[in-house]
Image 1 (cartoon, rainbow, N blue to C red):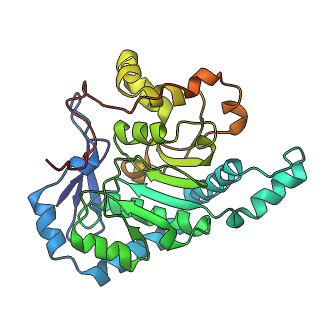
Image 2 (cartoon, rainbow, N blue to C red):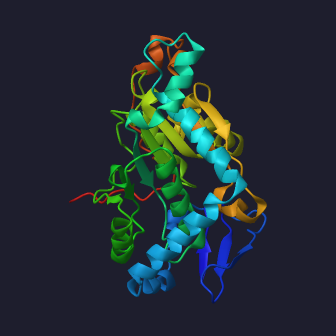
Length: 303
């Protein structure tokens, strides 16, 4: 069984279920979003999914990742980001900043996960789901307060997610979710349009500080995209690169195709408040009419 990762490479699963190898992408081959890589083979596998065994497999991976050195850095970076998203009222003393970090669990974080992929057939997606569960635990975010959505989910995969305690969204929001309280958005290897839509929906000096993203680096997106196309098609990413704060997350070499190019992205109020008022005016909803290979599954419109 194979699974195409967000990097464009394929993971081949061996007979024992969790041992896998990576086939590198050919030079010059197009990079595709993992949520678009659906195959009849994986669909068949999902229909026969054993929910209990799948839940156990995911929890085993959670235990595996918890013992990894790099996980401690991920955990600490999340907690730092959470403290940035809700600074203490009296923000001048170091003691108060430290108190804020010690009581992060009181901040009532929510979580939204988009574009996870078909975790029943894709080992990479399964590891990313396990990492999500670890992050929820570290941030003391109740499982029910984590909403997940991917058009690729089968009905059985949705049952697995509910069995894990997560909330499965029924509507394709296309990433257009307004943060009304500090929210962690988990967007592993998603297409640029999803990030761009999320930024558009929250493009204000009041909402952006509530947004914490764990996903692909914005600076990396800028490096890999022609500048005029980034400004034309993904204007909010283009603007966000210069106002966000990115902290790159470590990744062991054996999981490079699962967690590569991943950062924690926040929007400190101190940076946003220095921007001219014109930054927040004339906000056009993204249309993507110049993007024939859009890396997002749009919601169906009724005729």
